[in-house]
Image 1 (cartoon, rainbow, N blue to C red):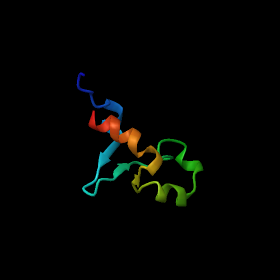
Image 2: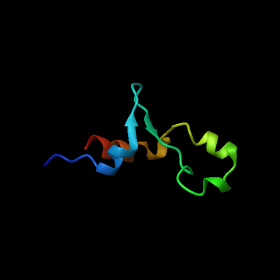
Image 3: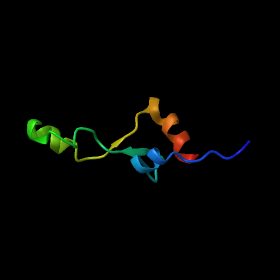
Length: 64
């Protein structure tokens, strides 16, 4: 069985923390920012963690 390659898109968008969680960026920060509330933009600055149901899928693509 050949080795699996790490997906380039996943490599750019996700990172693994020391505790084993997967970090991701928040959405809603790309365009039309003048129409969005300050609260939404402020909360979108922070990074989030991948949910349990998506964890295995993302981890499989990260490790290759």
